[in-house]
Amino acid sequence: MFGICSFNLVAIRSEATDRSEMVTQLLFGDVYELLEESENGKWLKIRILEDEYVGWMDKKLFTAFSAQEAEKLKSEPEIISLDTVGFLTTEKISFPIFFGSYLPFYDGTYVYLSNSRLSFNGKTKQLKENLEQTILHTAHSFLHTPYLWGGKSHAGIDCSGLVQIVFRSNGHKLKRDAYQQASMGSPVEHIEKAKSCDLAFFSNDAGRVTHVGILLDNATIIHAHGKVRVDKIDALGIINGDTGLYSHKLSGIRRIIDG
Image 1 (cartoon, one colour):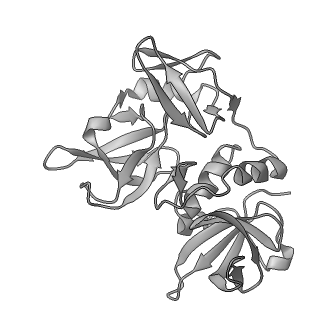
Image 2 (image 1 turned 135 degrees about the vertical axis):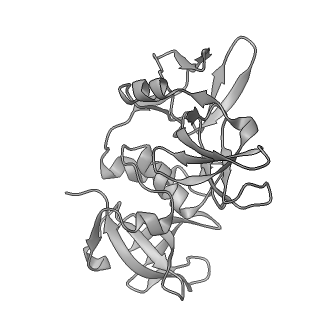
């Protein structure tokens, strides 16, 4: 059984309780597979189809999406909203959706979802793999966005969420967490050989990858740490522009875009 996100910024939690941490969010139009229901019937364990991320969502926010609809959607152009905050409207309601949200079955005027027709007149684009400059422009649009663990929007975002949504909106679909993203693409041997749009990864004292950012060149990085910010980077790690101290220890660089 499948579902589709018909709200905005639906919290996905690590466990089936409101007290559990939010590990990611669903944006409008995200499709997911239902895996199981909690014993109390209040929570659903789901797998997000795009990145295979697994977590728990509040059952009250579930919108059914048939296997036939999911299969049909695969053959449709992938259209996303480019507005920081856009609005879907019907005759009765208007509600917001955030940058990078999918617009299922969009015909240029209406989104069709669960027997509903929703009007959208914001900026859109069909997904394709874009050039480095476009990716960097998208990343800069998030500058000063506050850090939010599990966040994926201009209302609040974490380090790997920033990377994922920036690349997603430019036609490159990445995994959700930093340690997962660290297995994608191809390795870059040394920061001197790095280029813009390479991903830099950083580890904790135990050697686990816990942070990621997007290189603007081989000496500067945009990343989410307190807020989305630009800092210097060298072979040791990130140099915080406010304190002049190292904030993260470099563990590796991966190239997502070849050429």
